Image (cartoon, rainbow, N blue to C red; front, top):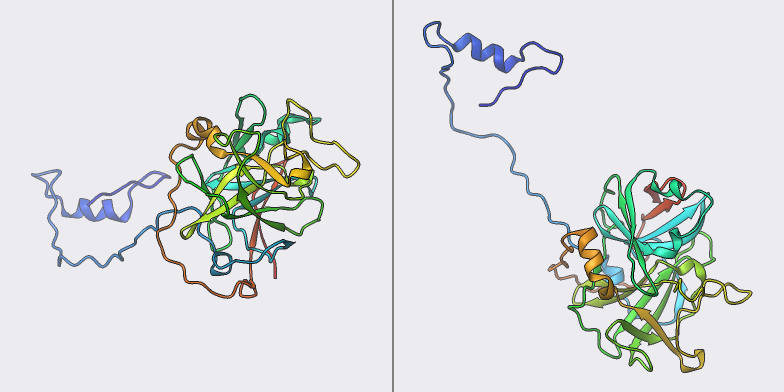
Length: 311
């Protein structure tokens, strides 16, 4: 038996009962009886896994690009300034979001981005970099808010593997998705890069993920980043980012693998979340069963986590 005093001072009911049982000649000893039956409920904490999504997402086989049914990608985050979307991001741990470092490299008041988070840490390698936002509080995980698994170089996504890109781009409040497939890299190293078929990406997609499924789990294999060394954030009137370092005519998109930042991510995330081992049955891929959803919305001026339910 363990008793604690009241925060305001004095004795609680437990201590009062003990005092009534202690004999005057043997202070510190107490006698009591117990039936041996513990009426407490058994509570089991479910381990947090990554890459787990709804049945609708697990059964997706459609192609091309489309507007997303709300809640379909439960790890996607929106980084916003004054309510306007700036960059995308992904929930990669219970208290961390990963995005493109270029989203935080400029601004009239860079200190504003630290409010309500522990810190924002950026990798420091040549060329493209990523950022980790450590949240001040953990979001409530549900079917509609889940972390994605991060590929640390231990997974193989062979040529022909179907993958997805998701982000807001310039479409306000409507998440867009683009399906593509892994292709052989040409004129670039496949060690640090993963190549796919061409995808039309806008600046607002920066920080979002390239997502590929393996087994029952979704893995982020790359972060959509802007190469700060070549200043490619605005190269034409439509503000398209040059995501591919190869010619547009080659129909190849080049993404920097998350495994390139493995040491940085390990230092800032600690243990990587493990994928789910639960078998998910296939079902209707229309997404109509998702009556509610939540989006992770982060304001760059306050970095607040808001759970919005869309109906």
